[in-house]
Image (cartoon, rainbow over the protein chains, first blue to last red):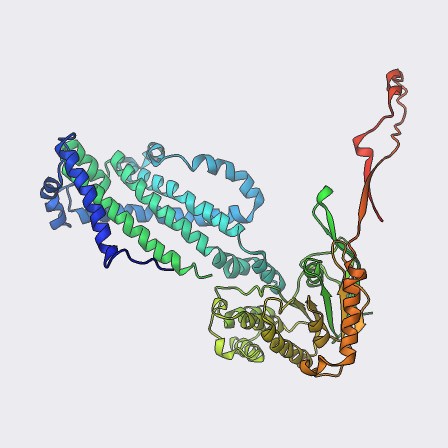
Length: 264
Length: 303
């Protein structure tokens, strides 16, 4: 049932009101206790250049905001697809084989809560052999590893939740193992898998910023850290807003993809 | 030698103290081309029984045979229509049935498989819903898809597990007529599981009641000697129909409904151990009769 609107156009008026409250709080904060926090006007003034010249390239870290986001998104995409490529088969193996699940479930449960920040140094060490590429590879490793778990676990749960009825159909028709996998197990698990994909993407986006900050790789996270070191506080706020917006859009897109598979 | 046969089959689930016997001493013979209905209470083990015939579950003891060969696993010679239809929701009607055709006749050309699929869809009057997904169909239509899929396997036996259980009374009537029709045309052996005595009588050559569980067993079979095709309206006043219904209900509500009471006693078996001659006998053991946990047995006695 659809809820009655409180008043006409409340869906647009109320969010604007909420945002205004937050901005007001920000203004008060910057003019009273935190004098170093730039107020909205100053933030806009100092960030304008990065928004109006979104693809400018003035140096290693000094680029337009869309260029920075693009670089970050590219790294995320690589790490994320690596995570899916490893995570989905791993999830299927965990869901299908009791022995496999008993072997690896404990270690997965222990590794899963480890923060991206903790993995990053290890990732860089792993790729020391590659010389100056150790940082980007380490970042990729961290993103892949941290964003993999929701996909692994959701896929495993999905495989276990495949109704016995569907498996009975496969048995009666004597479908081969391969055909059972592709005709029954994969389609029946897809909704669960997509829930995993969505959470994984969120985590990948969280991890990229941390990874870039620590390794100094070019991207929105790296930019944020270099601006902090340079004392350009307004651009930190610009970065936070940009990161948040992109994360929001990514989640909405995944939500749309997920809804496609919720029909069954 | 009967075509389809169950001999002294018993099936239990669970283990230890929670173990309970669902079916006990089941004996059933079905002739080729015969339509047999098994009527029983909900939860009395009807689905367990049909799963044994399908090969989805095996009895703890006794045997289930088709054409003299033991049934050990499911196979396309026994088409089954599941109680909840079990259609694959991500496939269209056509794809659901094509999956079966493709699997049973792998050597056919794509064109022939397609024609066979279309023929089976037409058989259950679903040509117009060909490209719909199960979620877009009504219960009765889904049931027809399920029947078409079972028929597409060209099985020797059609196992129907409460196929019309989830449908309203009017749709049930229509589909009963369709099932009878399909049976008469295809001349397949059919085993129908149902909880509706009248449905069993309208459709079957023979109707067999299944007593109330646990420990459910088959009662005496009643032959249904009514001329076909059977008209549901006329049957309502038919004396033979009424007397068959009475016989079946008599068993189901009388003998078959008796809940068996049991008492459980713990019996202690004498503990006899070989004497260990290398040690002195222990004198203080005289104080009580030796008991060992593993020597205790529980027996159930029916009263």
